[in-house]
Image (cartoon, rainbow, N blue to C red; front, top):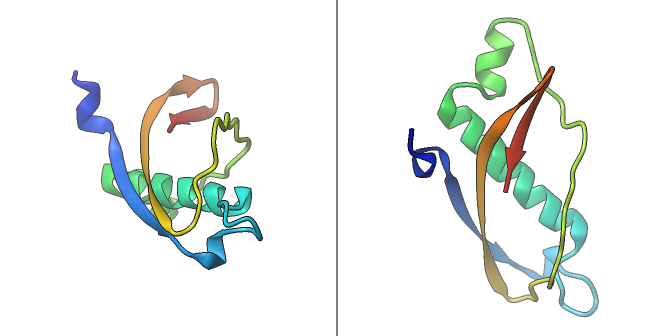
Length: 96
């Protein structure tokens, strides 16, 4: 099984609404981009909200672990790559 098949990539343009007074992306905006990419990828894989709600189940984001080496500045763009990583009891783990 090739991992590349399960990697989802999406580019986002950064605008002033995503940045702070120093023109760096706000952490809240960065997290929002991660969530958007994960949401779209789950839908593509057939395990997103629209699929789960049909069978009466759902999912929640329980935690994030983020390492930031350098925040991008505005105007710019970022590319988010995300993929399913595995299962830990009842948790489905996703990397980005």
